[in-house]
Image 1 (cartoon, rainbow, N blue to C red):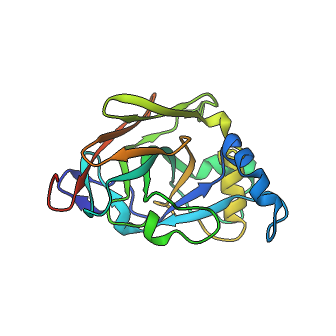
Image 2: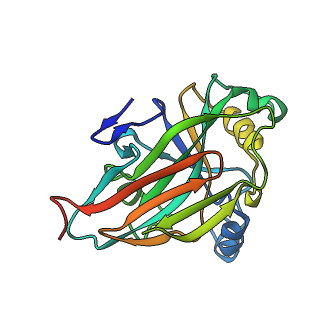
Image 3: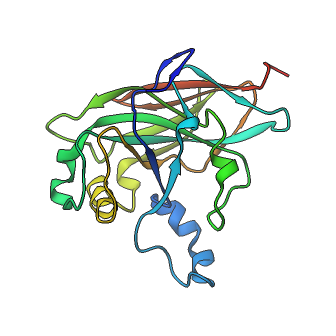
Length: 225
């Protein structure tokens, strides 16, 4: 597990994100996807990866260069895999889930869906995740689970799990049809919209009832400027 001055990241695998998994987000891009080269909206989950250098523990400091005055943030629900999953059917998918935690997906402004946003998404510390993995109860995940993004103690965006285009079982089934999700991996299944602009010096938090509260502070490299 990755360690920082603030503690431990509660996962030790790969973090996969799912873009365009909110109905409003997909609808907003409908015209763009109707044009070449796509011709239609995605018919399967659109994935991205947050590499290990982006992981940051609860309470950590996100260091950005002086050239960046603000970045974009969204709060995400992370599904943590507890048992390897390959070619899993949707009705059995939740058997492979250890629990859930929170993440804050950070990015430079200007990233889009039409070219790989490696630099924009993958700076060191651009994925605070935690604070801990919360095991699922027998009831599973409530459809109306709300995920909120706070900036300086004010809620700036929210989303509910039932706003998703693809449910968690569907995502696990679809992704495991072509690759193995390993124990310790995490899947960012849905995030708050729109991505919020966060200025350097801000304190950012992701919250969800029954899951917890994840915080980070955005600073310039070398301290406040």
